[in-house]
Length: 215
Image 1 (cartoon, rainbow, N blue to C red):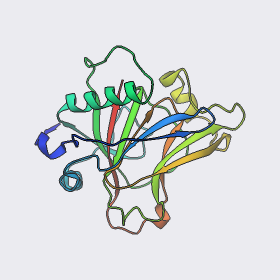
Image 2: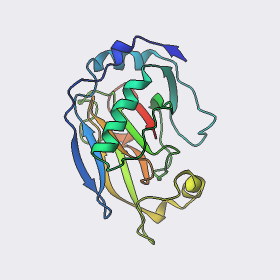
Image 3: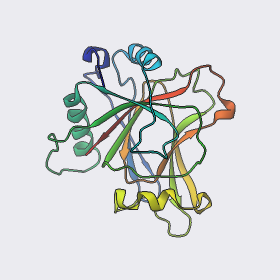
Image 4: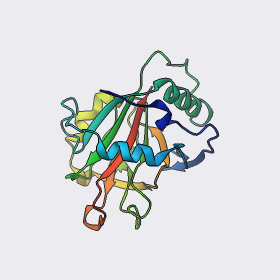
């Protein structure tokens, strides 16, 4: 784990969230434009750090870089977002350290949903908007064709069951296309998956993102 200058990863003090509702369940997705104060510094760091395959998530097609950072800043933000916009007023989980990572991909074999162990996930693309033009990258949300389910109440307990399902059992009902330095916050129990239109990817740089996972 590397120690970096926390000021380089500073989140803007005055954020202006946009809220959209997706699917039949009207699940909320929080979108924050201009998320980082110095996004170009984070992009430069992400392009030069070391990535590895996480043995705890062997089916993840990407590579991950974990790093030490100001975790309290993330917790303060995500607690605010879940309280104010998700209607989640549980006792604060400040005692739980979030998982913060950078992720990059060289391929995505299966366009198939999963759920995460944590309650909430967040992603901030680090590719410039000209690299993301024509909707080549995003986060997709899925519905089970037979049951109509758009999320699981059992969270990680059904994780392997979902991954072992047939991709034809699912349909995409919403894709949130990525924009540079735009943070997307959503419930991890929603069936979701990285969307990457690799054949239309024209830049020499990889698809890479800043990611948070919190309770």
